[in-house]
Image (tube, rainbow, N blue to C red; front, side, top):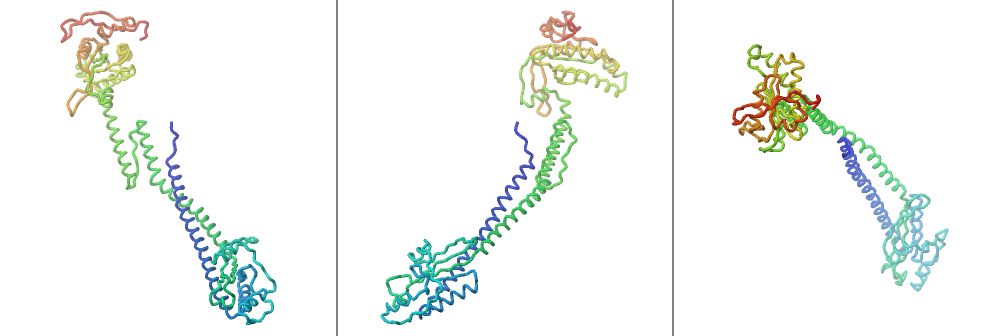
Length: 474
């Protein structure tokens, strides 16, 4: 048996997963996009600043005004605090820390064009020849990267200062790179902002998903889960035989239409249930199996109220119907209890069939119990008594009637014989044929055989009157 999983659990699970995936993906995409754009903007700003500084340094260097460039670096450092700029020669030594460039220029010009100057830097720095510096020099391009120092994040850029043709007269033409501009910017604030963006996105996700899940779950509970559960309760009530239940759904959607359909179905089932009281079990079975007709071995049971016409003339209709219904109901219960099926009621007569193994025994047991019941409490049946006739053999079981009105019943010679025996039986008597008596010979106490001439038979029938079971038990 498969494990039952409530629909509400499935709905909530789908909601949470859908919201988590959908909203989570959207928020993460927006957060990462914002951080990516922020990083891109910072990189572009840094590149732009480096280009401005490049032009400033180049213009300051053309007339040989190195002090101007040095003061520019110092002023930038003092003004920003988090932004530093330096200039290094291609060999990694910080520019303006000695007079080597002036000496080289004078040597290239062949005269002392520029006088040596006091040291412009109080300390002489040599940059580490890392891979980024080397790549910038060798590839003559701008290199941007980041490092972490003492818990803070810095963006660094190497931008080469090229030895242009107008510069080669002074600096010589044996090299392409005159120097490398080194810019260092503290971007810890931007990283904190990126982290805060992610935290804010996570907080929005943590609040928004449960809130929307609860709201949508309540909405679906009201519009879908509860109506479906209510429809299930209606169907469960019908399955238990309660046809008074009805679906109470007021929504004007597919669920509301389903509720109306269920109510119509329950009403139809109730009507069919009431009609089934007037249809034999064999008829219902034949409809299920789509049977048309077949030969089968059965034991036929006929019972009829004796002197019923005279009784009905002496008593009012209400009393007649009440007494007859009690008698017919008692016979039906006994027949069903012993495995028989009431085929039909014909006025005050009962026609029943018994099939399968032990059908003769079950039919005789029903007949004796009915006679015993009537004799035990005749007042309950207003003094009515019945005669019973049984026969056993092969009959035709099929759908008999017209296209508009038909009944699944038994026809054949044995049906007629059982009816003739019933008509011949006196009040309280059970008559059976040889075909019924033969398999029960050792179990029944019976009188006979007697010869009974019946309509439609050339020879008299051997019939027996059943008295009781030998030993008192069937």
